[in-house]
Length: 304
Image (cartoon, rainbow, N blue to C red; front, side, top):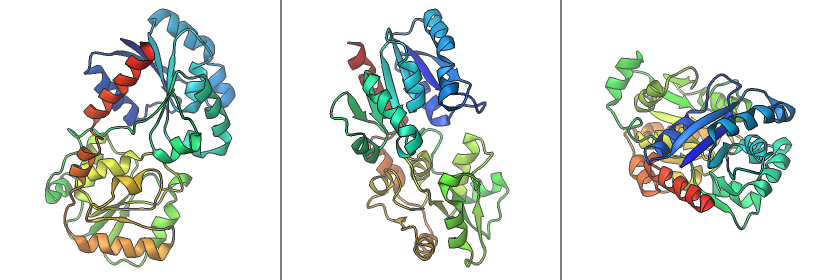
């Protein structure tokens, strides 16, 4: 089966969870190529239609898999090749984009939602599936904290908290995280920015806890990857996090109150050992291999 992946490329790089999903699908015998949307904004996407049509003619895919609502809408501006669209969160939670995502849902042959919250919000009763992005459990594996810290040059005497993104990303709500840790002695809040995937895996083994305070999320890879490394978690109830960390000792849900986040961070730091998060990820069927098989089932359904 030949699949064309349509996704944003205007930042100069592709989201890792897209490339990792595509690579996993390829191991199942699927042939895949990419069409990158280089322009920004609705009209920028629409201007890419001519280039997409040229790509379709040259590559002759049997199916298009678009990631995010605007990419899906662009892909559906042709009606020859069926389109599967995956919605990752911002395309559902951002009111400015949601209208276009709704149109994409109507036009798409099948729709994939990465969280139950977003699937429920869509209101779709047919031609839809709930399939969160999977975790590369070969890369995100538990390792010895001291060894990970040594490789990263981190101080073994400091308590480290890894924040779920760049501080300047407004959706990630860094102000809450920074306010919550201000009174902790000998604690450093690390910004997740500028690291390779291998370094991120090391960080999740090197730190004492990961922290997410986002206003909105879909099915955040950050939390699932930390769980695969057995790292303690503190998170607000964004996206599917409550379900993912449910009943895992050493993982804590917090409210959006500074005092509550600080309280849960203290519990996580006092926990002072690794969790059984990796087992939970496997139980939920969130390994990249398991998710790839579910994606392939969707492809086969649409192409039947």
